[in-house]
Amino acid sequence: MQHIGLFGGSFNPVHQGHILAADSVHTQLGLDEIRFLPASHSPFKTRPKLSDAHRTEMLERAISGYPALKIDARELQRPGPSYTIDTLKEVARDRPGDRLYLLIGMDAWEQFEHWHQWREIIKYCHLVVLSRPNYSPSALSEYWQEKLTSDIQSLKGSAAGKLIFVTIPASEAASNEIRERIKQGHSTHSDLPKAVSDYIEEQQLYRE
Image (cartoon, rainbow, N blue to C red; front, side, top):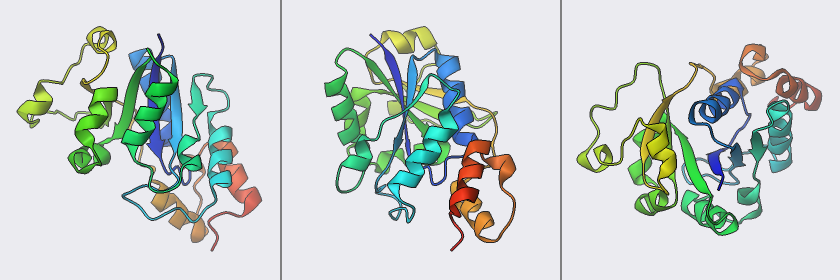
């Protein structure tokens, strides 16, 4: 049995906050690996103008040096919106017996009950919310209170259906703001892995 984190997003571009979050969850929960799942078309966003190839290449460069961080490109190979429930069903079919942990940010968590088949999602995985420092989940509904845990051993000992908040290193990076700063000719070196920053410069990305 392996414990696999799944981290979806547009990653347009992948930034330091993404890498720090994935590495932090891997360490704190003791997962075997974290898989980045670049979305072809998020149901909540317009399709990225940047090609899938560029986004994947930036991810490859960003995770170099992090052996536990991987890329799973299945959503890029599937037509239509990238629904998380479809991805979870595929991964569960491919990796029977493994435990899955879905990583989502605070913004996504606050909208989670609007996700497609959200009640089905937690039948296939545990939900790992990337929490801001000092965040307290005191206002959770009774439904979520019953699933909430802070006990990592209890989490890993269950097949699916639990909720845990994991505090990650603070980061102000946001992909849309990074794209805009690049477009305006401002520096983004502090927000991007050097290999990603170099690639953006080499390919003259986001300059339109």
